[in-house]
Length: 182
Image 1 (spheres, rainbow, N blue to C red):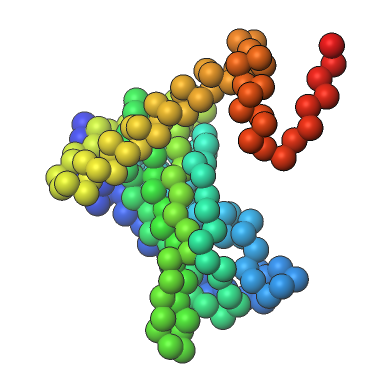
Image 2 (spheres, helix red, strand yellow):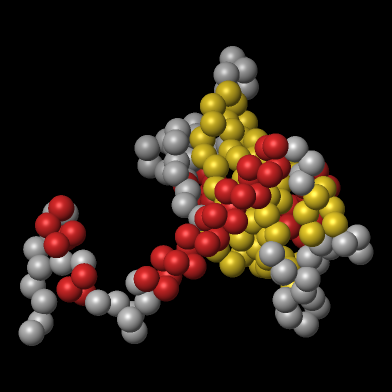
């Protein structure tokens, strides 16, 4: 296996027509269905890049920017934006197209952290990432920053070290009523 690869070697694009069976009661496509498709393309992208089976370790924030309608053609694009030792951050972009008018809309984007696994289920090293454009550097640094923020957030709010008194004043900004046991 190559020690380094270009992100382009990971690129995957899938398109699927949205059917009534994918919709919720308001006639929009279920967000869960879209998330399932996003997870599938993230897997394919990570497996293609690493040469190994890949599992989803986490999904960064998903904002549903616009609804997807029945009858629209959904296209998802995925690429590896960041690599660690055995992990990869796969960026997934979702667009929906009205196939009669050709109008396209960006529906959401998200970042899936995938981990490469061997046939015994053990984490395995993935190739390094060749950054060959300003955009590739921006995506890599953005993902690295998001990874670091996640580690800090998990450490800050770890139950064994959380100090409630440090956060009580901030709660006055929210729609909560505090009734702590003494």
